[in-house]
Image (cartoon, rainbow, N blue to C red; front, side):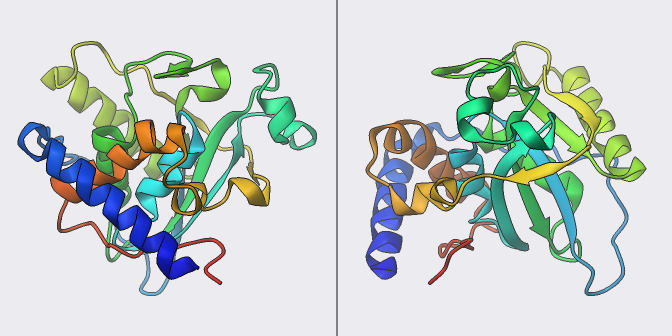
Length: 227
């Protein structure tokens, strides 16, 4: 069953990639400021919000050097970290992903570069395409001073280069907690590649990753529930 799902996702990605290849936007410039590599064998995490977590998780599950991606909630209290509550837009939470990565294979700055290039539109405020509300805001939750420094410097770099038509609205705030979302939200893109929302808004993000960052793309996703 999983093999069939992977094949369905790969077919959908290939179709979108073929249709969009001529129009694929170039990658954003690399960060001028980046985090130093950690000790060998030590994994790091990044927590990012950029709209519905299905698509952001789906993108980073195809990124080389990423070891795990969880969909979840950040920005609000633990007691409110439930989908029905978060969906009201009143909890302070944003739909988020926690990305565990090997900093010797991919840097924190490169994670942000991919995020801004293909996973989200960082100029939108409290929304992301059809989804509206503060739970869909763009936000970088930093866990260390280095992450804060890199995120703020990269946003400033992109704004000064005018790579977007509008200023970047993505917030940079301290990480107070990440709460894993319900199991049915995990691996959603891979398990439901033909669901209309996924097919319309999220499969194209994975296709863009493959086209724009071919050296970073891996065909087989790193799933939360691989069995």
